[in-house]
Image (cartoon, rainbow over all chains, first blue to last red; front, top):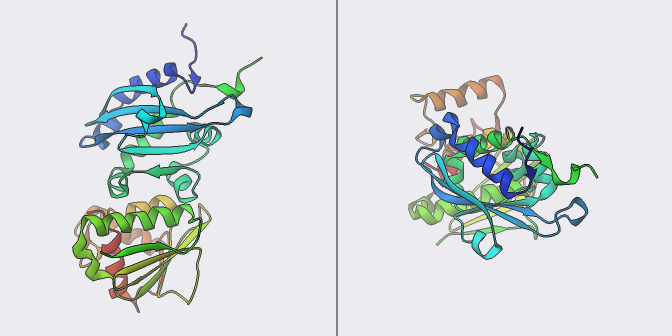
Amino acid sequence: VGEVPEFPSEEWLNEYVERINGSAAYREAAATWEGDVTYVFEAEPDKGIPEDLWAWLDLWHGECRAARLVPAEEGEKAKFIIRAPYSRWKEVIKRELDPVKGMMQGKLKLKGDLPTIVRYVKAANELVNIAGTVPTEFVDEKPG
Amino acid sequence: MATVEYVDDEPNGIAMMLGGLIEANLAQHPEREALLKPMAVAITAPDAGVSVTIRAAPGRVTVANGVAGPPPDLQVRADSATLVELSSVPLSLGLPDLMTKEGRAVNRRLLKGEIKVRGMVRHLGKLARFNKLLSVR
């Protein structure tokens, strides 16, 4: 029996990538997408995230070719960067916060070419839906 | 080149999104600068509880948090996801193209009241220009 991956972690990202690559809906919505994306999980020391974590995803034509936690200077080079405090990401993953609504409210901040993101909003929504399917143990909910 | 200015020191999320979209569109399609004739449009996303007022003038766009300043020509009200989708709807003469399924879907939502546009009849030309300014097509 596999362990439930902790969020955020390299193990969680690996499971996420597997599910992205298994999603027909994402493959279709992002068929012509080209560009890497970095998610920044901003530090919340009281919730077990002492410093910002940068998760880089190499997304290309409907698949995720690679993903890993990277240093900030590497993550900053991505074509698109979405950042929010850890607990906001947790709300997104638990589907308590719609990402588009979150961006309109300024709860999630986006850096990158906005027209491209708007053109691929379905693909972005799929990425969020997939994140919600990953069995997840949130770092601030760990027992003990 | 046209400038996009934010009135508030801390623009809200919808101001950053729509202001950023107009800025990028003007940079990528400089010919759209011709659309910058006087108009004021207030946009509200009630699901997110946020509004923005966008005013255009030759060579300049100003973006303000909330419904601010003199009464706008147009007031658009729709949920966040719909507002984003509106930017990618195919247009014909600046209005949703009814020959496409996306254009017809917008029309249906207008009729159902899911998208509300106050001032649409009186300022149809301004609405068409504004749609072209925001369009990512």
